[in-house]
Image (cartoon, rainbow, N blue to C red):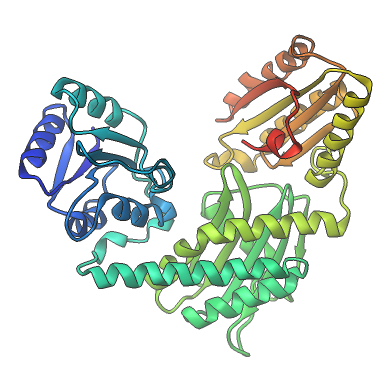
Amino acid sequence: MKKILVVDDSVVWQTFLKNLLEINGHTVEVAKDGLDGLNKFFTFLPDIVIVDYVMPKLNGVHFTKFIRSFSVFKNVGILMLTGAEETINPFWAKKSGANAFLKKTLPQSDIEREILNFVEKPFSMEWSRELYKLHIEPYGELVDILEESLKESTLVREIIQLTSLAYDESLVIKKLFELFSEIFEFKNIYIGLVCYSEMRLYGFTSTSDSKLTNKDVVLRVLRESGFGANFELVDVNYDSERQDIDPYAADLIFKDEDLLGFILVEKPKIIELTNHTLALTNSPLIHLFQILNQYYLLRSQKEIDKQTGTYTLPIAIGKIFNAIDFVKRNSLPLTFLRVKIKGLRNNNQYISQRIEHLIKSLANILRDSSSDMVGRISTSEFIATLIGKKKEQAEELRQKVLALSEDFKASGLDISAIIFEWNGETVGQILSD
C-alpha cells in the first residue's frame, strides 16, 4: 500500500484518480492546485505524486522541480498528466524531475493500467535524519516557496564557487565553516572528506573557550548515523582534547553507494534550522567533495589504494588512455570488466572485518587476472582493463567474481559484473554510469 497525492484542478479527475487508487488499496490525499499540492505534500509526505501539468497558481513542472530540489525526496515517484494540446519540450520534460508522463486523452482502460503499473514501482518516501520534520511547517504562500528557492539557489551558488579553490583544500573547508557560521549558531563543526579508506578530518570552534572532540568520538558518531568503515588512515587537521560530544546534527555526503564526506555540527542552537540547511547543501557538497577528493589524489600522488592494492582513479584513467592508444596502434581487441558492490550505503555491517575481507578478496581476483590494469574508481566500484581479450575471453574472470556473490549476499551486499568491449568510446564514456 502506498501513500499517493493527487494534484489536479479538475474535480472530475480528482474523483476518478482517488477512487481508482483507493479501490486498489492505496491511501490518497487530493489537492486542488499546485500551491495546495505543496502544502499537502509537506504534511502528507506521500510515496507517489500524480500531478496535472496545467494548473492555476503553480503548474506541474514548477511543482515537480521544487520537490526535486530537496534531495530527501529523490525516491518519491512523480507521474505528470498532460492534456490533449499540451506538449512539453523533451529537454524540460527530462529536467523537470518527473518519472513519467501520461496523456489524459488515452482510453480510460489504458490510463488505469498505466497508473496502476506506475504506483507498483518501488517509489517511496525515505524517512531519515535528513527529513528533519519538513511536514511540521507547510508552505502557506507562494512567497514562502519563492523565498525557500532563493535560499537554496544562494547556498548552491556559494558552495559551487568554492570549487575554483579546490587546489587548496584547507582554505575551502575553512570557508565552508565560515559560511555555516553565518547561517546558524553552533558550538563546534567537524567536516570530513573520505576517499576510499582514508579520511581527512577538519574541526572548527565558534568560540575561543570551546574545545574539539577527538577522532574516535567522530567515528562513533558516523556509526550512529548509519555508516561504519575501517579507515586505513584518518588525517586529523586540528588539536583534540575531549572524549565526549554534545547533541549534534549530522549529514552524510553520499554519491550513490560511496561516502564522500560528512558535516557534523555539535550543539546547534536551532536543530531544525541546522538540519534544514544541511539538507539544502547536500547536492552541491557532493560536487565539491568529489572535486576535493580528486585533487587530493593528484596532489598526494597516491597511485595505489592501501585497502585493496588497486590503482587510484587518476592512475586508472591514465592506464585506460594508454590501453586505448596501444590497441589502436596494434589492432588488438580491448575489453573492460566493471564490478560494483551494491548495498554498502545501507549496510551497517560494513564496519565488520568480514566485509573488508570480501572487498580485498574481490580486488585480489581482479588483480590476479589483470595484474597491472585494475583500478578502484570509487569505494564500491572497480574496473579491470583486459588488453587483447574479447568479451568471450573475459567471461572466465566475470564468473570468478560472481562466485563471491553468495559470500557478499550473506553480509547484506550484492555484486554486479558487466563486460563490454571497447568500440571507440572515450575514457569519460567508459567510466560513466
